[in-house]
Length: 139
Image 1: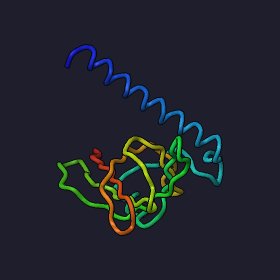
Image 2: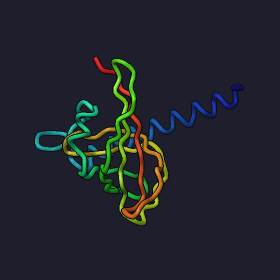
Image 3: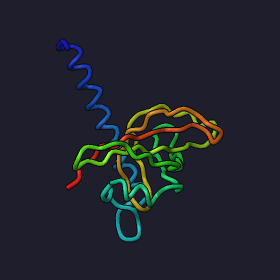
Image 4: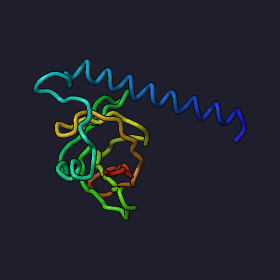
């Protein structure tokens, strides 16, 4: 990798992190996600937490589209090394939702808010599908 490519890649990464941070700050200030009774920063994100959220709605905060409701429709276990848990989450977006992959601020009453990288997983009869892959260390 040459210096120009390195700097371009680094700039995109920094911009993505700034965007996610800005969205998280906007989310907490506009939707009251801090304080008693509201959502807070992400709780422990792990397979068990997401398993409890199957078939429930997560709110994706998009800078242009605004809030988009995604339903967690599937949790796929992956083969993991010792002391790791690997799994994939499959979300469904409402029909006719045009959303490209990227890092978004997600919110759910069970998890709080957190940044999540989603990529397209195709379409089916329910609408557009998005996936998030996890490889988490366990103790």
